Image (cartoon, rainbow, N blue to C red; front, side, top):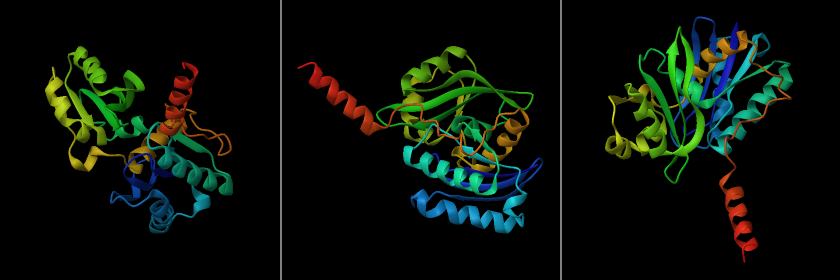
Length: 238
């Protein structure tokens, strides 16, 4: 099976080509350029370097959220456009799943943290069992101290990764009540290679959809919409 994968859900933008056993090509950029500038050229490059014609891919895997609203829309639109043009299915890979799968060899709890601002994170917690992700804590948007309390309660050692692990490192160190570590830089943030390999697993489990059906999963409303609702709520109370 051959998969083209895209992840633009966070700070990094990444594209990869993989088959069942190999990462054939990968291109990841983390230099603060907008994903609208980098993603399509990266996709073009990994396809050319892999020497696999676009029509030969079986599916397109995409980090489906949560994450940056703009980044998710760019990734979703890119994947949908390719899927519709090529007549290929899309494999939506939850961003937190893809991030956690980067640490698939870790033998404790894997806790991805994506910064959602205002001491909030997109997060979940996983074990790896027989090479597969198993949820210990379901994905959600919550306060950094709340997820740390939940992870503390497991009594297990924990690996933190994601951009939130950097942003909230001091709080994690203050609140720790468990054996813990932070992922090294080369697996800290999202990667399309991880989305690709996890996407192949999900495809074989029947977890794919048509390009027309695909929608990104935001987990919570955009900030502008939340602020508007707060203003409207305030007015209604006057």
